[in-house]
Length: 436
Image (cartoon, rainbow, N blue to C red; front, side, top):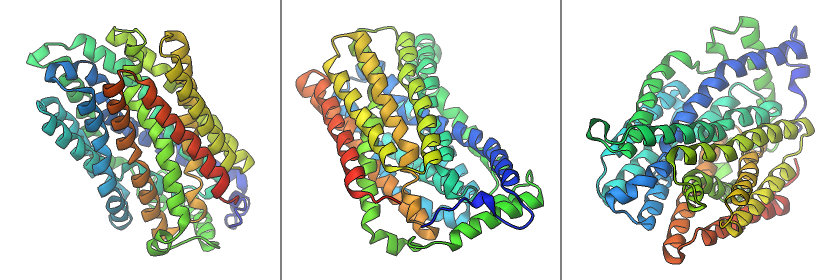
């Protein structure tokens, strides 16, 4: 498809600068709130990594039990993600995102009361079921507002929520674990689930009042701005070229499955830093909960900067493949070095930070690739299918790392396993994804 600069001639009476200002206005209105929602989702998804520091001893769970429980979230996520995104296209983003946010918050609160491995597995599975559809739903929702030429940087801004959640979540979890032990007859790890679950329920109710469905519903845009954005998107969608419009057609296209394979490899690294960073930092000799939380934020701060820069640079140059492949190569090198340097706290943390830079920088650029050949219903179902299959790595990686640590007594072998997946992503992108 010829991705011409839509902002240069979107509609009569609207110049490029005016439309650019409108997109900036939309971004400032939508992105911070969507980032806030995903930070809540991410905290409720990965706070089990911090709860693990005490929960395993209290409940007498093994590392393998933890790895399976952390990962089983993604089985529920996988099974319900495509239906959720197809439902979003029918009933709208507001209702879908509100339902998702309220239910995952309730599930997080309920995590505080698990006592057996079976209960742990069930609640993690349900958390995945309830959160399913949020991330691809937002990716799809943003295509209702921004044309292709803006999507890598817009996706990058939204996906800073991955990193910001790590920046915020680490110190917050450390404070809760340090300060809430024994309060109200609950353990500190129980309070972690409760305190981080309640805001999600409240935010879900607020979604219904704050999010407009599409530009035409945004009362904070003038009628001229609404028309200009709508016409620009209609123009782009009318120039579909080789894009797949139906889910059935997209389902048969090898590009969907190739993207899913690449995303599987990328997510394996993300799941590793999300669920195992606290354990890695503890393994290199840090025992204070608050200090673990603070140090856990460092890789995510660096990853946030890399994510924004890589997305913006990719949009500026129009190049996607190498921006994604180089990022996953850096991730591979960082994870490998982390596994080799676990005996040295300083160098291990530096290597983990390098890994986080590569992992997080790959995300916004990757999500610009499927939109090059998907539109309409195919975009709704295809994005969800790629995300759901890719997120199975969120099950595989934690489970493999937990199992390998149980059998070998070290995290190194698990980190090497994930590093191999990251280099595989680089190979797949360079060798099989076409230049567009």
